[in-house]
Amino acid sequence: MSLENAPDDVKLAVDLIVLLEENQIPARTVLRALDIVKRDYEKKLTHDDEAKSDK
Image (tube, rainbow, N blue to C red):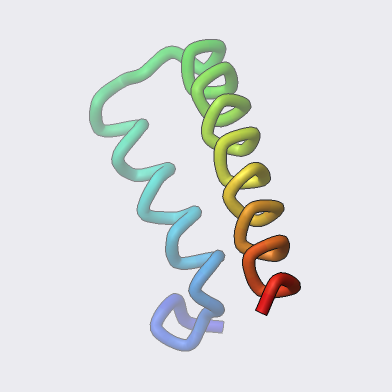
């Protein structure tokens, strides 16, 4: 499968990997940062779901 036809989440993952590797970010730093990002986006999902159910 070419990246052009890949799902958006796969495209984003590839872009992030390239960005992190080009900037030589240490793996431990990347994983810690991704944990923070994941928690933040999980909160956003919860907030968005609650806002939709209030309508």
